[in-house]
Image 1 (cartoon, one colour):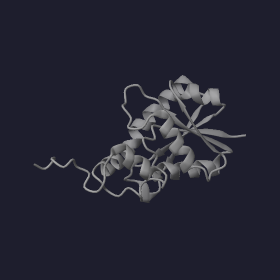
Image 2 (cartoon, rainbow, N blue to C red):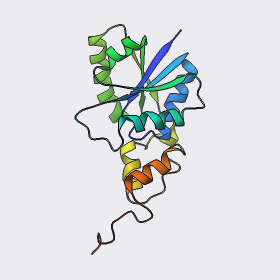
Image 3 (cartoon, one colour):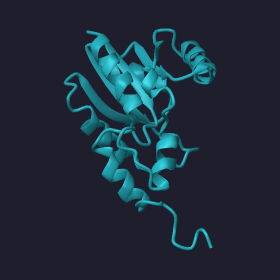
Length: 170
């Protein structure tokens, strides 16, 4: 049985993430979407909220589950019985940092391989950071994130149309 891990911060999950997860789900018998807990980052959503959003967004994929981990990705992969880490790439700029991470992971554990999957063209500009910025200013993110994420994101940011506090332009 082949098992892969799709790690990331998923703060929040986007349609670009879902695209990569769906493609991994066609390739592997089991896919674990793993929310990486990074103590140096301050995510908008807590771990439980991110895992919940992933589960809801991927409910149509019967061989996909969601989890979270803290520590080394290769240690988590090995503990899960996975031999492959699937990483999505949007642009050449992603490749440089992801290649460095893949080489380090290989150095740490040669039994775990990293598989790079190019995002679909329609999602190549998409990132969680951009989604949060657009939503923070009251922009429409319904074409950028799964439907279950929109209300959660807007509620968390407390923004409606316009997105700025009343006195921001004074």
